[in-house]
Amino acid sequence: MADQQFSITITGATLRELRDGLRAMLDRFEEPAPKREDAPAQQLETPAPKLEAAPTQQLETPESKREDAPAPKLEDVRAVLVEAAKAVGGEPVRALLGKYGATRLQDVDPERFPELLQDAYSLRDGVAF
Image 1 (cartoon, rainbow, N blue to C red):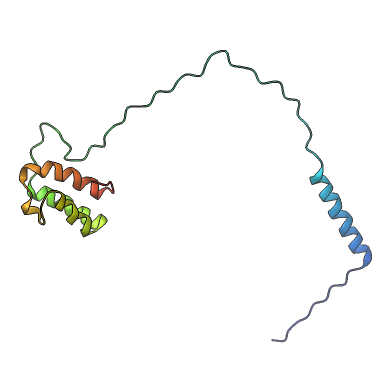
Image 2 (image 1 turned 60 degrees about the horizontal axis):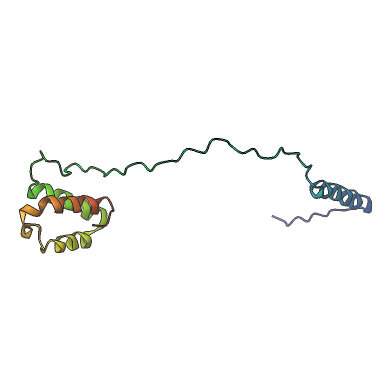
């Protein structure tokens, strides 16, 4: 395909019209904005109500510390640890077991399963234990 060349012819009159149009446009933007006559601010006679912080709520996990809940079993803890390992990797799960003095889940004292389960939920959900 052959290269095509284009030429544009601009006359002096065209340049002057372009210049005048640009000046008119710039003049419109440089004009100061019309001043508004605002009424002076009025003071409120009643003070704004004080906002109290809402009480913080702890997020409940499925096996949260309910008094009537049975103690978690090894299988329950293992299932949550597997979910945590999928979410954050194996190293944080090993560190969590190390917190309980174990290298394997079977080495953790079953009485500490509720605590370990809570930490496993936190680890799974991205909260530092």
